[in-house]
Image (cartoon, rainbow, N blue to C red; front, top):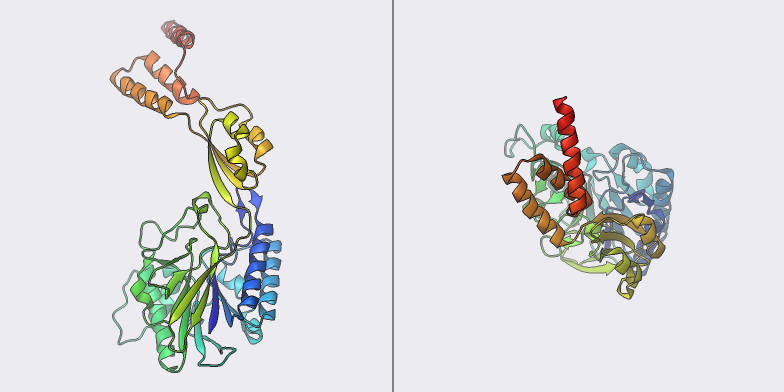
Length: 395
């Protein structure tokens, strides 16, 4: 059985105000290519199909086209709702589409109903369980009410770990009646030990959203979504495919890919990570504006989406417009004066803490705003202004 594991397409997402739809279309076209070239039996999409609950029409059309093209390859498609998706909207046509080999599951109550996939080359079938993103406060009560009476008592306040285990208990009860089936779980959650990035939406405050790797025991392969970097947590058996494109500068060093999973007759998973190699790359460049605009070493950044860190002592006028002359896809600009200025500022702040004179406070504020110390003439003007204010107050 050959599976293609992908996730977190975030269709309709913008990058610092710019549309990514063209790059996303290229990524999906490449995924279709890989499904066809690899004679894949099923494509698993582990949640966050869209970037928001009500996606733009162009994103919906792109998803529909991708589904049609994937089915033309002969592969079944199994997708789930993630925390960015509307569970109801993405799965509204699931009962109809499932008869055509496409499952888009958003209803947690049906997570124990598998999609049965038979390999093209023969062999035992695979039971693919689509488990959409679980919200403890919303999904917990229903899952708790259907819990096995012989199982451990259900906590009054459910965590992500608790609600996930409740859902998995129902799935395992179904799987027990299928001894001749290999098993695959598709889930969207934050598994403990996973490495996050800046572009994922927090599920909770703190670490109470983490689900242990042990919760997923017993499945031959667990196709995860939510974390944007490709990574595995229990050998190749429990893994995140990551996003098909980078969605923040924290992902600029990721190799965006999909996972081609080969399940043998015993359910052992062998995984090939296939880079997609599409879309505009991201990079961060640092230096003074004149250096950035002229130095050949930055030529490779000219076609990338760029984060610029300017080290000029003062922020240059029209910096963004000038930078776009060489780097047309500049997405972010940060100003970080040289370390010597910050060091001097630190020393100055120490002096200010020891002296609360109005002039010390005024020159400190000037330096914080301008990124440099006030000149002697500027300090004299500040002193004159303070004296004028003081005299005005006396009148």
